[in-house]
Amino acid sequence: MKQSSFDLNEQNQSIESRIIVALERVSEAFRVLLWSESKENSLSPIQIQILIFLQFHPNEMCTVGNLAKEFNMTKATISDSVKMLLSKKLIGKETNPNDTRSFTIYVTEIGHKIVKKSSLFANSLKKPIDTLSIEQKNAMLNGLLTLIYDLNKAGVITIQRMCFTCANYRLHKSEHYCTLLNMMLETDELRVDCSDHSLIKS
Image (cartoon, rainbow, N blue to C red):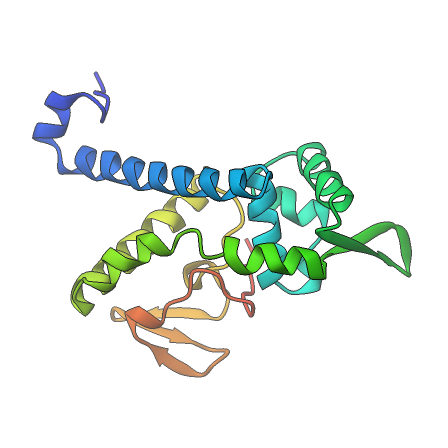
C-alpha cells in the first residue's frame, strides 16, 4: 500500500517524501508572497500573474487562449480576470485586423507601474539561493528541470518552454547542446522559459 509523503513516519524513511514536502513548503512561500502583493494592489493573485506574463512575453503569446494554457485554467476564468484588468485600465487590447474576434492584450502605462514592483514579489526567495555554491545551484536547477519535464510528460503541467522540451535541444554524453545557438550549454545556461522555444513534434 502506498504511503502519503505527508506521513511523518514515511518522511523519516524516504528522502523522496522529504523532497516533496520541501517543495510544498516552497510552493507555500510563493502563495504567501503572491497573495501579499495582490492584496496591496487590490487584485487577485492570477491577475498579478497575468500582468507579469504580459509584461515579459511577446505579443503573439498574449491572448486569452494562450493565457488559459499557460496557467492551466479555463478561458472563462482567464476572461473574467482580463475583464477586471481592462476595467481598471491596467491592460488594453488590440484586435487582430484579420480576425475581429481575436485580440492580443498589452500592459498599459498605469499597469506598467504596478508590474514594475509586483514582478519582484519572489525576490525574497532569490536571496537564500544567492548564498548557495555554483555546484549546489547547478544540481538544484538540473533536478528541477528534470522534475518539470517529467511532470509535463505526465500531463500534470501543460506549457513548458524549457530546453528539455525544445526541438533545438540535444543531449550527448551528458553534455547539453542548442542547435539554434549552435553551441554547448553549461547547466547554469539551461533555460526554463525561452522566447526561441520550438516544441518537439510528437
